[in-house]
Length: 61
Image (cartoon, rainbow, N blue to C red; front, side, top):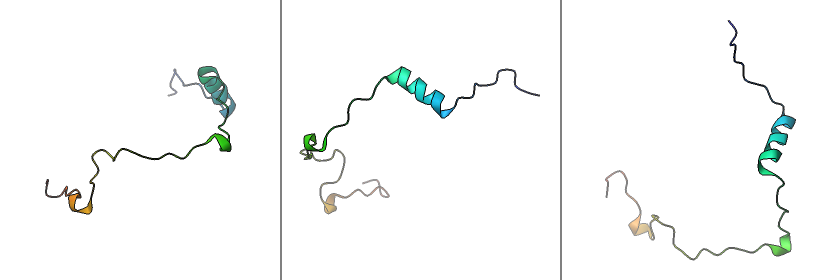
């Protein structure tokens, strides 16, 4: 028996159109001369700071 409520089948072009309708135009790409290098200033949250502070999940420490 065939399912009476069959899902519509979309092509890649249909999906591209629907994405464009939903999200609009993409912003322009950032030029290489406008890019900057990031420097992390905050330590990672929840990550061990030194090897002596490493996580020991097997023992629940």
